[in-house]
Image (cartoon, rainbow, N blue to C red; front, side, top):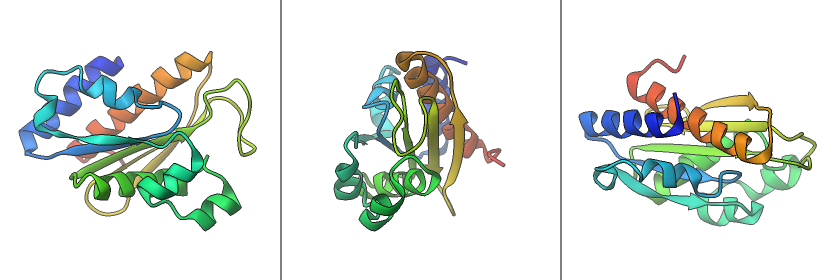
Length: 161
């Protein structure tokens, strides 16, 4: 499924359930939100998004623990989980989606290009997945969008396990 198809499915799922969503993006720098909002009717269910490309904005805007970032960096499952919870709270949405990772070409926080963590939170604990993507920078970013929208659809259908 492409990102656009994933966005249509995600928006339809939110609409059917009367839910809203928000995003917190790092390596995609707003591409998830932009993809979601290409779908007609997105404004009824998409609350907004945080672009936390710089590490300090993950703390300031999404509430990611600054001590955690200082000790562990931002390319990890805990950061992705906190980003998902933070955007959900900041945007007053039912579902929070997040992504943090390395699009490349250079490594970051000891992780190579293509290492990505995506997160989603709705009811209960956040669900986080680690991805190991390949390809040039733009392919990694687009694959992240697609994977995150797929995770959002899984969370809506209750099949993320």
